[in-house]
Length: 476
Image (cartoon, rainbow, N blue to C red; front, side, top):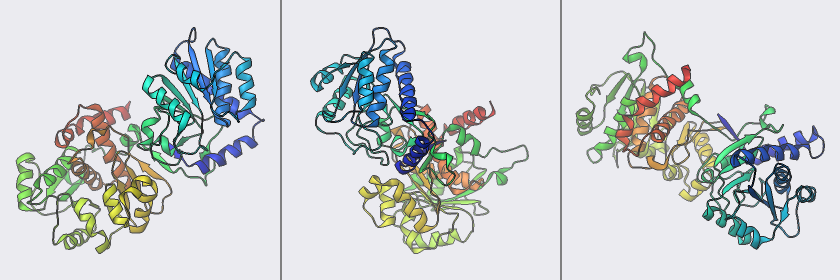
């Protein structure tokens, strides 16, 4: 897992590290780590050119001291101070003394298309979001030229605590210090970060047990560690029976897709107990699905219901079974009219979450972390906010879990339906709602990343291959 920290926590850790270090030591560690990262990107030093874009603060200082190191290792270093009035003076002097060549804005912009690499050391976590004027020109020139860009701490122009992709540099690699920042893990900002290279440099926000990361992003190993694997004594009931009330006469395909997700994620048994038309359609595609009512360990309700007149009544009926319930899509409209249990899971997209909170969609997309927190605490249940980044918030918890990121190909009608089936299977197997949500979303992302673009039901057929790879990797 990668922990993502708030600016406040990073700043607190910085103060602690500075108190325990000699003056300037922390910057020197950062500069050394940055220079090493640049050398790895270059692959060699002879005849290479690097342009350092140095901002007015400590971020610029990191870049300048790194430039000084590179100049002593055979790299031709060009340096541009992006603020006429301010620069990190000791770093500037050191870079020039080592052979760095100062250039003005016009020359820096021209060099961008000629050098081997640009160090973006303009702004760090204290910078205001969004670039404009000459800085925006430099960022555009770098992106249009395709030059390798190594950003210091974060791509200049991004806001550390926000997911928005403000006008900024687009990095090939971002060398960040102490721990990941929120913008480096969540979309669309994360799409501008490139490879994330976390360097501790003696700065660890997690050292204080009273500090909790804003987010934790799962990786494949975390999914493998949580995935329920049947043993030699398992049977279809011990593996978990998932009940589905999804689809309708108007939207039968939703019921079929949910059943695909549940079946190919490895449910012990799938019961399709919604509209008869849906059950018949499901059986044509998946003959192992059962239509008869009976024991279930978890429910999935809501996908494809449409404007069902008895929606709230049906949701109350399902909740009376006293098993975990995944509430999705059209069933989310009933959330304010029924009493949910703590083991429920809501799986809205941004528009549905906005409706649950009585907010505008733009508010949710601007602050997904705060929005998913509010929903979990308001309703007292786990909430999975679906989208390019998938956030699982549990009531009363400070840290939100992020699913493994995946490609944009899953932004497709029906993907949410198959995901609901996967998560329902995991709930039925006994996973806690938050773990089931992140595991299910991660399975879909990992499968999509390993396959060509596929429609949701065909992608579901590949879930077993991904699960096998996960488990085999965990055994290595």
